[in-house]
Length: 205
Image (tube, rainbow, N blue to C red; front, side, top):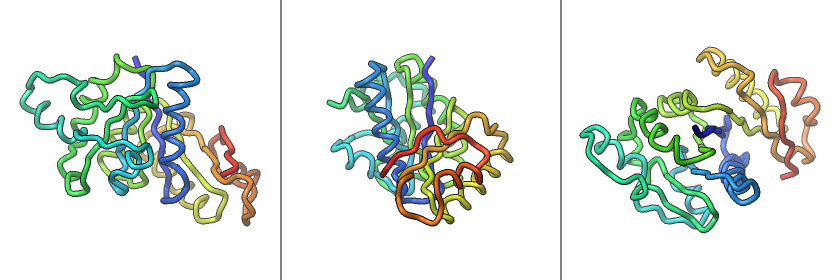
């Protein structure tokens, strides 16, 4: 049984994709784990693949019609093995494909991957949509990437309230504070006081 770690943020430009990618590679290279990295950020399609120097030809959305028809297929035909020691699967390859990625099929796709990996790391973007919630329902741990500024902290408090409303307990949510040492109006200690969840990592930048 794999453990699924979902990484998200409430705004762009906070380092979410970089953190998700490095977490996956670190687990594979340093810990010897079998890792699959999923890109489900539908607002920034293709950013993760470009950052990793990958050119995927198939995506999660291509699995949907096959699952519907219950056709036989090989999972390896959809996963991209990389020199980084991880496998990669994009949600979509083009923004216009996003509407064809069906939330009620997300669980099936995770079930397909479950026995093949120790960890599934997912970048889910920053939008509260059906795909986002369906992915969180498959997670064991939610990492919320925050920066030490007033807007980020305010949006994070709103996101935490929303997650609780959706019945995700605060105990499964942890904060990764990026740019923790930057000169800003809020110190990391103030961020900790203002958020009801633990800060498990403070990254310089």
